[in-house]
Length: 115
Length: 113
Image (tube, rainbow over all chains, first blue to last red; front, side):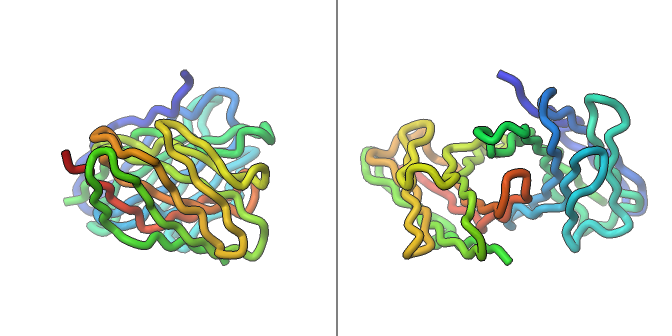
């Protein structure tokens, strides 16, 4: 069964460093998303990406964040200068355009720890 | 703006008992509604979805949910809990296909032997 894969599963970084979280969406999907879940809190939307551009972003997704689809398979989230409060589980998701398949498929997540 | 409220951050049931996890939503347009499950150290897995077809939706692992527009609810049920159902459950709403998901706070389900 096709799945969304994320790497790494766990990343520890020092405050102020740049991190890139990687995702390989399901191959025929065209909608891509990043969400995050701070420990003990709800899953929050960060950004959606369609047709090679950001289609929507939340207030959390400030200038420190960027997304990119550098090739036909990867979808990345970059945090330019990490803060302690960026520590969270980050989930990538993708969705097809088929009207019957309205759900997003999620990856296993990357646990980011900023120290 | 859309929102989701899940009543009860923790629910504990005995094995074989009915599972009822509550979800109420707010949406200005006909919603798409979803229940996801998260097992420890894993990602989010779709249990079931409502997309304006049948109001009673059946999902995986014996779960089902009923969309009640008058009550703005989408409660998740399972007639008989199994130990393997212990997990965190998230209700989510979207306002259109391809739209972002707005999640509830999650409900942790414990199943006692």
